Image (cartoon, rainbow over all chains, first blue to last red; front, side, top):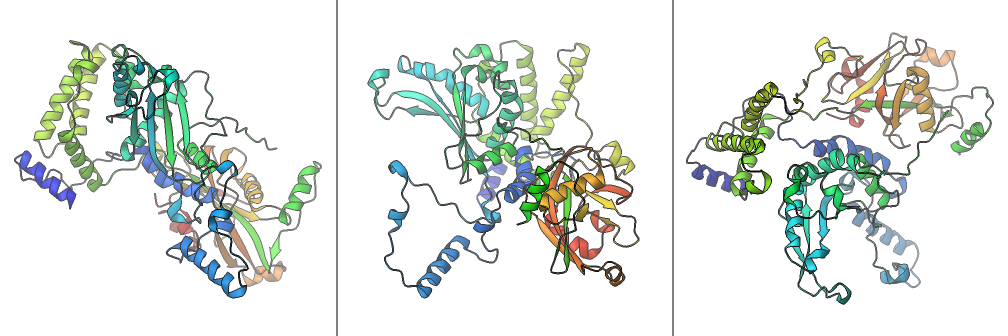
Length: 276
Length: 275
């Protein structure tokens, strides 16, 4: 519906009632298709499903609400077979050492919850912005150039006396990428930037936040490796370091790393197993 | 259970006599390999996809903030002149409902590149053909064919019926499925392929009965259960051993029914990629 509304509006603007596209056969090309997105849906997703398959945690294909149904079935069968002596509360069972926040329970495996890249966050904290707000601008333009998305300015939530940072000061910039822009940025990062990084052999095999999200920090020199910045390097008064966080729908680090390695993000430490 | 024998055989490096094939409930356990070459280029977009992309691209341009050209280009530079030419083309495309932004810019840039070839500033960039020599010759043995599609390796056994199938072989007693798959692939198709097995779990299975005269001659099993292991090939080429396997082909899912029986295709069609 929204699409139709927009279509009618653009038709008025161009003062032309003719349809703006033809459905005639086109020349063979991948015009308009996203390379990495296609790669994910055609190759990576299927391989991830096989690689992360676990016989003990598989949802029945016939159940619509697999997780709920299996939980219900378990609860019912238990209550019928043996009377529960003293059911411990859920909060009591699910507790983490040191009072850390609980991790989400991984759902049962099925074809609809294969790990997928949800969003990429590019974030830069500009420490010089404490002295002069103008220093933010360089990082702002740089992030806008490399991601093709307008960044948002991060405002300090709390004061830090040691840094002379006060609440409400602009301190950094951030871009959240999803969909088409996300895959385009990932493509650029993997094909152009990562191979040109000096003395960097890949992400460590221990990377990940425990829930399948993976972050990389980049030095200021890495910003100049992006083709958009490289072309107008002189216009940026200062290069800033930045970090890139890959948010995935995976539930474990191993699954998150598998997904990223499917996009050719290098991981170091995986030694080739020699076989005779 | 299966693993113990495999571990033992590894720890003794000396040659061991070949073990008996694994038989379970009168069915021989067989490991098959679905070896695929993944698509090498992005597929062709459909006319609808192209039209949708062209339309959304124009919509995006209408709502986009104007580019700060004095930030990105030096005044009077070649890059600025190029960008202005591209911009003119884009404006033309916006007014013309039948012209897409991408195509309009591509056209202008190809003219710019031709000008450049007189005074070469950079290496000229040329797009390769999406159809290869192997496509034109219909060389089914080449890995360079059907770049947009997934290719699967099928091999021909020296017999009249059911001769074409995926590489497969009997699992030996005390051997893992994935070890058997790797061994059989190396035996039948040579070691000249860089192969990666996707996990150690089968992706599908196929059960069939042996012909009766075959069972009379070789008692012990009435049929076979084939478990398919998925693998990708990255480099190299299949080299049939001319004993177990006499011929091979790299085919797409659509071409597979021309080679294998309908029952076999029914069993494997869901584990193959449509692309």
